[in-house]
Image (cartoon, rainbow, N blue to C red):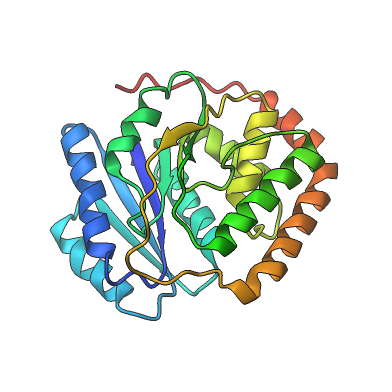
Length: 257
């Protein structure tokens, strides 16, 4: 199955908004790509509420657009990588990743899509960010860590609003450390930037969370920061060979639309 575009969306305990978020993104696919083969792939990461049941109830409404994958709870990063693997296996020419918490707007997708022929890897950037203080602190620490460890400045390296060439994503996933890091999107961003891709850091809208469960609580902040920093330091010694492997692969941009 070849797809022009797959949207990858991890979901955990989002029963209050998951139906609206799914409908919004499928509406985008239907409106923007009326004649193209596209998919929304939602990874239900072991939700404890009705998120899984709601997704299953939505699937018959969108038999050719919605894919639902249920997995035991493994964390956001694990769910994202699983979704990427699903999208790559489907032969997606482009893969877009976003979250299910209704903090992004579909209109901003065009800001990345319009530049898809300029880079294999494009990031959004939450210029004004509405998140819990713990998450903002983590973002600042990680941004500084990336600069100190890799000499790379990426405004929002872990943002769940990114567009990736499908063939390039496959190569990135092959270079991703095992086991899956806590925040794999950071590693993908660093490898892509170091391999010469223009990430652009395009400003997008970020809304205040109205529903759902914040997965990182204050008491986990120190543990998360220490784990991520340790993973980034360990990866520093591997980065050179990973980037070399990425640069050695000649990937042509799809003709697309």
